[in-house]
Length: 132
Image (cartoon, rainbow, N blue to C red; front, side):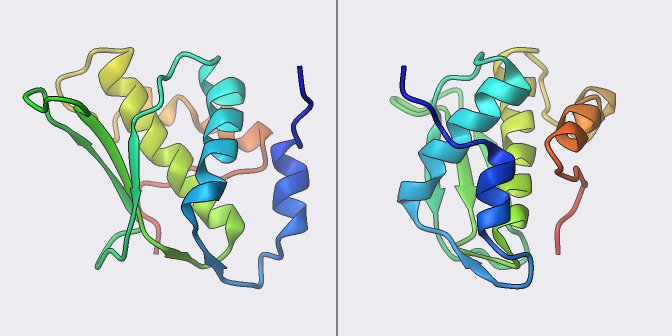
């Protein structure tokens, strides 16, 4: 099995002082690392879209009537830095976990959501309700 860089190494490679323009090719690597280290590999790959979003850095959608993708994560195309991108992707992955694994009717910022705070902290990440 091929070795992958650790999340800490990837974050250190990107300065917290530099803005980060997201490209679709970076998402699978970070998604896989977060899935393995935070969610024990339980999450399937949802549709992930990158586009300019006003008033948010990302959001999770669930549509039980969709033909192909009923779970979708949308991410903004610009972030304050690489770490913020990783935190926002992880944040939306928690909502996905709430819906897919915990079978919650609503994927809200509840105690199950914040139960991931310790795992995020171990990876050097913050977990907030809102990102600016």
